[in-house]
Image (tube, rainbow, N blue to C red; front, top):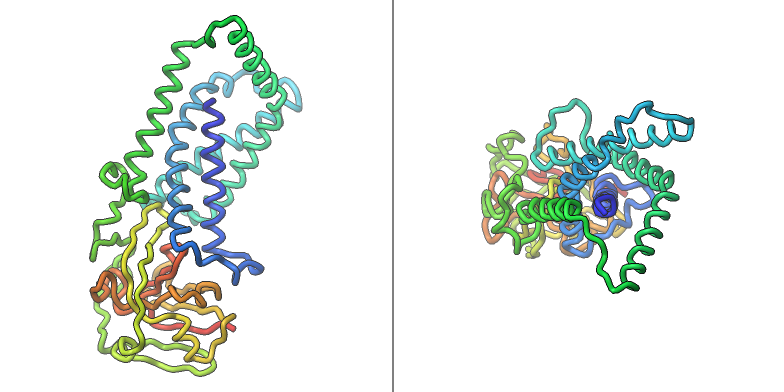
Length: 362
């Protein structure tokens, strides 16, 4: 039963993680077909990713506790087939432990290792899922025999009028594991699920705390943009008909307002009212057609996402804005003053702040 719960958590975490990775690093054939709707799509999938990943921690601990004597059985293998099976278990256990450990530290934005987190996390996920499928395949005869036995015992108990046999210690253990999973979920899921926000005791972010009521991952001070002057700032739009705008000229263009979430890979998300100029209007003025992508350049040149690319599906969406205001106020420095990107169904790391240049990519 613990294995089923853990397997379900791993599958949810794996599928939602693939979605997040694809949005951040899409393959060429899919690049211009990424979905910009539903608006809250990434908020839901990444929230599920982190929730299921945190729930997997007590489940993984419980599963290892139930089998740990077998992990250290001696001799390690009595046949070549058993040696291959145990090698698969080593890969599964090692990758699963590393996956939940690095994922948990990512929610805290703490990276005490020399390798890149996202790429390593991605490939560890494939190793863990591959190891899980290999393990299930090797154990399938035993799994089938166990299910048949359980069904036979349940049928016999029903025929005799007696209830199913209950082992008190086993029931207490399963109840304790279920309570642990429920507890860690309730005290962390509030960073994504609004109606659980009051119980958000252990999550690293409160989505309603921060400048202008929104959290901040990378501050203006860290990016070296805290002294950007609106009077001196210019937006360069490079394309077939390039042009430059001052902040006043940008603010004088038709403004549009949209309620969109900021949804970060760490699992937190928060909605806000954003006001600015549609990106597609800015690019059309530069001579771009509806199939164009855009390269977004930030004044933050020291960060990993100082230069990003926006796919055509986002560019065409009328909700994608170069925002100048949030919740009716001029953007704070930490939220990207003078201008930032906000788009629907997009990871927060790609909602570029302190934008200085848009480059049309045909």
